[in-house]
Amino acid sequence: MLQAGAKNAWMPLTLPQRDFWEEFTFHPDEPIATVAHCLEIDGVADEQALAWAITQTIAESDALSVRFHPAPGGDTPLQSCDPAMRPPLRRIDLSGSADPLAEARTRMEADLAAPLDLRGEELAALWLVRIGAARYLWYIRAHHINLDGYGLALIEQRCGRLYAQAVGQGEAGPPFHRLASFIAEEEAYRASPRHAADAAYWRDYLAGPVTLPVLHRGDRDFSGPPHAAQGAFPEAFSEALRRLSARTGIGWPDLLVLLSGLYLSEDLAGQRADGRALVPFWLPFMSRWGSVAAHMPGMLVNILPFTLAIEAEETLSDCLRRNAAALRAQRRHGRYRIEQIATDHGLPTGSRYFFSPLINVLPFNAPVFHGCTVTRHVMANGEPEGIDLTFRGRDDGSALSFGLSADARLFAKAPFDRHRLGLPAFLEAAMAPDALTRPVAAMLGGTIAPGRTSSAA
Image (tube, rainbow, N blue to C red; front, side, top):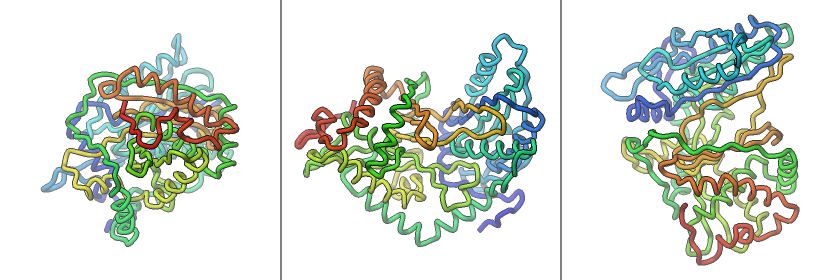
């Protein structure tokens, strides 16, 4: 087992890292796994303090100093933490440009369009862009093999604390945990009774009538842009969502997941002999709590299959509560990786599950920088496979927005536009005072009914 804190030790890739490495071998010239955020920070009192806080945060982030090494006798590399791999902070002054924001966005989009070579030296970028008096953009870009979206959020939050310390307005708090500590912890989990129990849960869960679609990596085509749409909900919607959460005892993020699954059932529901409609979709799972990973940037998000079960005659209230309980039960076994599930089910090399439709809810506040107004812009979070639905908002459900994206080669424009308009309308209807007592079948226009099977769009 690895010794936590060992310097320059060669470490195995984690299961998600192995998955991204294999994806890279099939598509080495495509920027398909790039993740990037840009923070717009207004009110910076000390540029040097901000630059120091960014640099110190990155120095603590092992994920951004990873170097991959060819492994003797195998295709999958090993990794080590090499300080020489940390991205240097590039400081850019665009305050004299006619349109600093537009100029900065053009430069960032050009950076995002370039593929990242995992065998090379530049896997991440770090810019501090001055766009006006006390106004800055902090741009950070990496490969998904090293960071997920929550890892980026951890980096932003940590930097905010270090900036507060630098300007004399707070304590830094503890540094990030080391990558070696997490890998040692993960090796211990894989040898534990809990891992065996989780394996048994997923074996039983996936023994049902739903068949998960499989993707061969070489079949993916990135020749054109995906369909994409963005929208924002009014604050009245967030208030209604919080009321529905209080009435049902279901957290508002899970309500959005389940209601979105119900909406998609009009296209995706299959029918079992007992009259239950089964709606399969995929859910990202953070997989960090109870682990050193709760305070460590990295690529840890899991993607788990969930099957929404709908009884033809039940009310919306009964449907939501029953499926929310199933969702909670599933998450108790969420540390077990989807890559391991694929291996358990005999998926061949070069194949993996097809993660569509994917529903993601991100209830994360923007980071706090003392005395500043901060706006987070998500610049890149990977390419959609089929259709992806992402909700973003503060942890209380306010400032709620949604994004819809789909692979244009697999999903026609007409059904995409129908979902772009139909999803918000369905969610608003589910917020109505009498919605919980209404039959689910009535809300879905009769799609879920005994003896009827829906077909995919």
